[in-house]
Image (cartoon, rainbow, N blue to C red; front, side, top):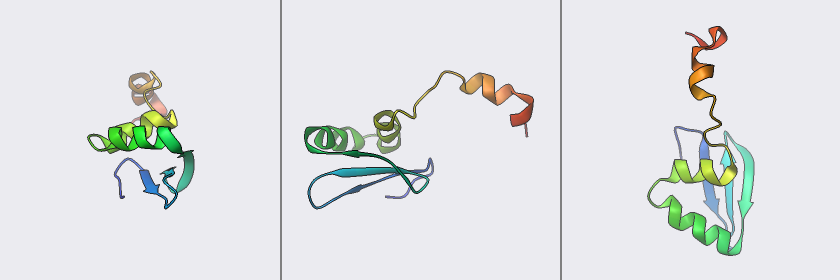
Length: 72
C-alpha cells in the first residue's frame, strides 16, 4: 500500500502485519494485535500506522516548524 506519509503495511500469509516507514521495518504485529490494527486501518491507515509504531505527535511539531533551521 503506497503512502504520502512514508508508512506502508503488508499482511503476510500467516496473518502477521509488517509496518514499514520509508522502506525500513518499524514493527511486526501478530495475532490479536494484527487484527485490531487492521480494523483501525480501514478508516485511517496513515494515522493507525503512526499510532501503532509510536511515531505520532511528539508535542514539538509547532516549535520545530518555527526553528530557524526548518524555515524554508
